[in-house]
Image (cartoon, rainbow, N blue to C red):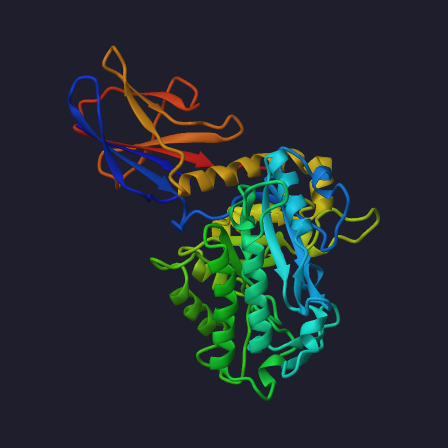
Length: 441
């Protein structure tokens, strides 16, 4: 008898194995994880966006069961400066240390973002450093160009020192700390692949080849230092004087040859554009949609859904709930990771919906990673029971087939709760699929 059993949240993945039942006969069990476009496992759950500067008690304030972790965001200049006595760079990773240990004590995970669009002040004063003037009113000013060799070398040194730094009071390097889940892999002097003013590409030293190589070099510095953790780059539209092939698509294509291939680190992609209706896969999210089947994606909310009393609600958050954004990210990209603003985490009316989705997103990651397996047990009466580690906050349904092409729902008299009897049959080939259902508002 051949029986194929699948745990699904989309289409099949993973491989078959054999299991010897008590009768001595062999039953072939093909256990598959089914997860939409079949991307690899990546970061998962609902994370809260941290402040860029220290806020006492911030991790504790968001210690809810529907929050998987915290995003620590640190400007490069806050952790590196020039020691005039030793005439060398000095590093202060104390905020990273304390946040990691606070999260570990609470059973939470960290995403770490180092903002490198602005370099430490001393680097700008070093001889020969090449700069550009970013006119962005919020994050602009004098910045190094991404291909500046001095700034790249300083970044490589800092990120490796960070990875190798022993977390205070522990024997773990930062790169090995169990609460650290993801580390961004930004572009020096730019941060993500995005430059809205179109100024950088008109710098007299700019060439497409030089720029793309600097992107690869900066991303590689982080991914090699934190190779055992997930890593990501903010990926947006970006153009230069050459219309075809487009700059952003060319950068993406090069990155996909440097990462996400056998023997090289993984690299996911990120946008802080999540809302009720975006980013649309045919517009701002076009490159993300291309990447979705091949790697993991991370989203941050475009803005809080929670608004001050009396505020006019803009159309992109018309739903009034961050759950709508999570639904959009899942339905369009299969994204298992979302960062939300603290106001949405603290709004009590969001708790139930966020709790269900946090469970679901982590279940997706478990299936993608092959950690949530099904078993088929032979009972003393000759019957078979299908068992898996069901989550009481999630719902499931069972499907059956005899040919893997035509599927129908399996009726069962018992609740679908992770321990379900399979009906007797004279068929020699039977296939079953357990589907994890996404939460519904």
